[in-house]
Length: 521
Image (spheres, helix red, strand yellow):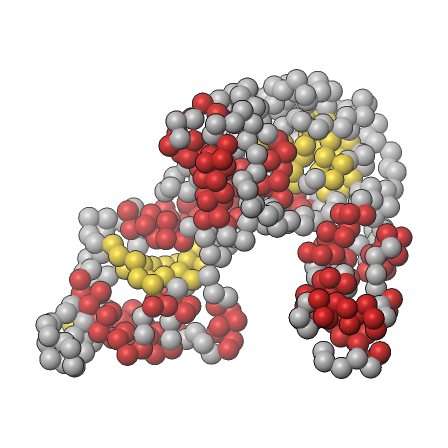
């Protein structure tokens, strides 16, 4: 495999098999509770799934097409095919009637050809020429395919993935959310604890509420508790109760959170932030089904525990900050939620769902009607490229900002103050060279570490070095003492900030300072 970004011409397919329209829906894979996305092997892929990420008719965003592709054939995408699950093809005059071909590769990847007419297309924001190879791992997550400059955006994934209806309040057609919905269906009727892992803002409490609502405890009480706010000194009393007079200030008997919610569900948020002493108290309750009130006698409780955290529990376990026994007790039912940036189909679908509600509140629900042009493709492309560190919570606030500032306008624009944080997608193998500005964006996202940038781009580190030299980008060895001192003064002595200003890695800058005899770092 070439280790360069240079475009390597490959002969296109000799024939163009006619693509038959398929509308058969495939049965989903069995739910895997502790895996967010099931991996399709190349021999099991069977075809492609397309998801609309942007269309002039915003109501079609999130629609899917599952297209089996026989051996030796290709996926042909054009104005009139394939047909999506709403019964319509792309049906946009900016998409040619001639087909863009996506040819499966034996390793699970695919090669893209613009057909006989040299169609214009974009792959993950990079202009395509034809002959690009999409890596299997990129197709597992999904590659954003754009038609021309203003045509629809479509997420292309290898494998057949059935659309999952919007259930349990979880909006989005991704395989990850489909598995979370399946996990809720599987775990809700069971009395066992559940542990929900995922970054902040991904909707862990929404899942906890769905588990309660779908259980046989739905008529019982539900309460959410932030364990990060529970101190060691009051934990036993708050959780398990106390007798009157058990300690100073205990002027009445309390049943505690477990006692008050007997027969219901207790959602313990931020369990990763709980002290080891609080963890020990929880473990005993989960093990024997009883609580020990302060100053009282043990008594049995019937409470279903759902816990959640955005902490890295693997790291916490290794460091001894989280009790392994408690982890195993909770993780019988484990639900993982990947970050939103790994679920582009959910980004587009959730944005439109949030916009509908926000625009309706401003009396402008018609902005998303077909043909209104209010939601431009360029804005959606920016949204899809954003890293969304705050996940769904950030996306909801962003949608409300769009509605607030754009409801009275004919075309929506980015809200004031929004600063996109670029998500760097994997570069297709065999792609034409990236623009030099794109190379610098990748380097900046990787803190100018050449090894990390090479992994991101899928090339050898020497290729990155050659491209940096061609673009005139600096290396640590190129820096002199005056430039380093100027950056040090301008950034208040911060090594990280100075390295970013000089566009080199922090480690490289420190080594260069050592070579020049500069003290302080």
